[in-house]
Image 1 (cartoon, helix red, strand yellow):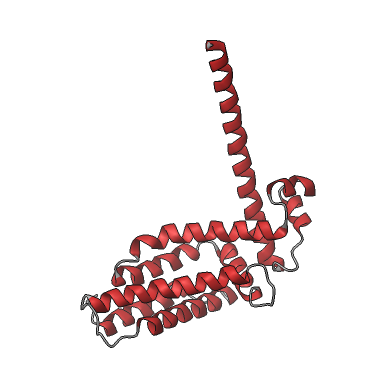
Image 2 (tube, rainbow, N blue to C red; image 1 turned 90 degrees about the horizontal axis):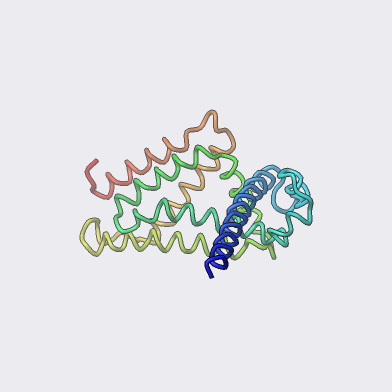
Length: 212
């Protein structure tokens, strides 16, 4: 019985090592795919090129991601989880949420290739039948709903003027962030998107009656 137990323990450890190795390989593939999507766009990027970038054969890559759509959705899900873990704690408080957005921009400024890939995918997803169309629509809708809900809580507890339209403010914030990000992507050496958003947030907080 002891011998069986030891054998089982050894098998479990081998599976864990294979699992960790597989997760590391998947992460490497996702990073390479994001780089390709940023350079070529999703539609033009070849999955075979991604495989070569990580030293795999095409069948080897397809073992991890059976189709290019699977690869795309894995990238989107990974990015969404990262964003949620970063901004989630700020959602209940309006001032905290607005300050947290500046923090997100500061973090984004350190990974321009990832942000460029997502900007390209976002634009491409406007095309009919694009595989990420629903994902980006759901993401934009959820983001507006979450920001609007935070404004509405601030109205309800008397923190801001009751006449403020939470959904309109959410749309304005998203538009400002998207516009600043696009200016930065076009010329990151000359445009400070973090400073641009920080200045806007300071002015917005002042207009809402918050002390700096």
